[in-house]
Image (tube, rainbow, N blue to C red; front, side, top):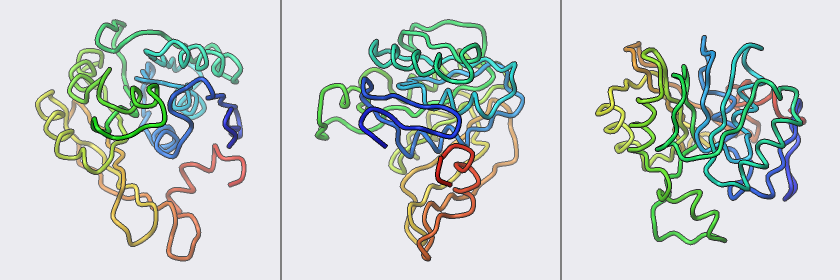
Length: 235
């Protein structure tokens, strides 16, 4: 990956004007998020448009995906990435904050939300703004997610393990039920560092599993390969 961008099998992401670059969290979210029968999808805080374009690759031709981005420079770059992709009519980028955003109901909302706490050091103010809970808190994500979702819609997020208690409480208070949770483990035998979580407005049997990125034999785990192989050039 260069500082300017990242090339996948079916599309390229330029991210030099975005605070948050292409990374494992976003790639896992885009490769995993349960699309099901969703026809309208909202990617909150789309950044470079990475997750939106991954979902475009995975979904049916008639699915419409909106990438919502507050930062003007990132939104402009996401729009360029979408227009240069194979799905310029499928992915649209809109500017603005989730708190003021209004649209017809979505079937699926995805987000790689800000979650680091204040007090951490970052290389630049833009990166800090992207990662700190400044422009969008988890409480707002769930509250406005409930407002924008169809009754049978779902919310998919990637979060650090430290956020588990908070996000579980917020989901419950907003009428969401945990449907699927994947523990993301960087190396077999270690504790998870991230959770991929899918919350539904409808009760289901809970699905629990894990994604091991690297095994003890220094090869990628089977589930990880199955998820990301359609995207990475060298896999």
